[in-house]
Length: 235
Image (cartoon, rainbow, N blue to C red; front, side):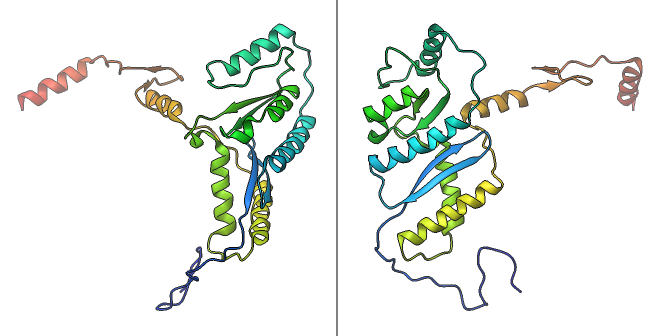
């Protein structure tokens, strides 16, 4: 009897797929992900040159900035410089900051690729108050966009046999629209979060409040406990 799953077939007749694939180009997925609410912005393309990538990023980032509420107060130049210095402290190979800094409004996590380090693009980010944070080489696990891309790719392509890049792009963008109907926020769960969890597990909760101790509190023995202990020893 068939049951819900990725696929099913009659007994003795397993599902088969062609062993060759059609070499008809590639499809790429440009992605912007907001972990706090799970909103995903993506676009399928067949070529990902700097002209294509930077043009799409500028368009989407400008739309996001336009939706952000205006700050209640205008920070002083010293406060703006302090914010930029705090977020860029300790980063190696970071671009040189301009003399006049714009009020920061967004943090943008990017892979450490040459296309993301193009001077014209970085200056555009600085002018619009966007602080780019580059992940280290080999640190793609620090970028949550990698996780959402794997989810979208599986939903769109698993068990399918596309025959053209346009078909792949159509399925990827359809999966993105489906995701945005009920997005799932992401929460960071790196090594620091694991250490905090282990630290909480080593604590002992106290009844009646949210207080904890790092070692169990010794329970005072009542006269009844002493009498029961003595009676057990006599028997």
